[in-house]
Length: 312
Image (cartoon, rainbow, N blue to C red; front, side, top):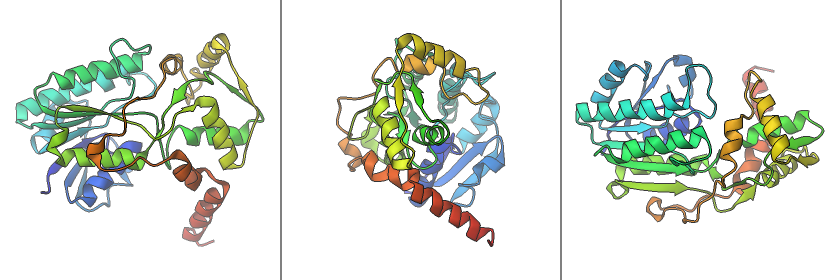
């Protein structure tokens, strides 16, 4: 049955795909955003309503939650900047969401955590995610927690970032080259969130969401270079130089890496568990998806598409 679903973080990379899945299933979706122009990819979807609101305003959040049957929380940050801290995004907001759900009598909460989230994690990011998991699990609500590994797909901030760097740099000095990841496709992640909204079997469960293969960071960067048409020599950095690079990069206006990111990579971002069978899919392989948006032909086709729309 169609439900009223409030999606927090619905204009982000993961959020746009989750909102589209929920709309395709016929749910009535509300997406709050501080700036309506950020919602261009979801505002025209059928059954989706975009409202200008700050979810950090607990009173406004409570109003939005009170109109919902289910809340999906996708809010997360990779880097701290100013008032946007891990504590605010990953701990205080989930605490406010839980309180609003309890006050409004909204039972269903689907929460995005991260693979590696732990109270004793090596990074502030992982510890804040672990604290949020504990809050949600102790809430008494009908919760589901999904823990994806690094997510890839068109518009991602991981493989696409390396593709841009490889086009610009003749050589790549790579921090933490042996860090291990199990990348998962955004389409599979979105499917799992939308499925969880409807499937009571997922209540009270935590699921790791990982792709079918494990890669080192060096293997991933080399693969991106081959697929994008810009293979580059990779110079692996040891722990000391990796820390120095992270310290320097976090000073840039656009943070490519921080010391906290580096700390996260000190623990493998992989899972021994199989992809959860409750979701009824087999995860797509990186090699089946990445060439579609990283390849040179893909870049040219998108440019031609823009030219066509511009009448050129």
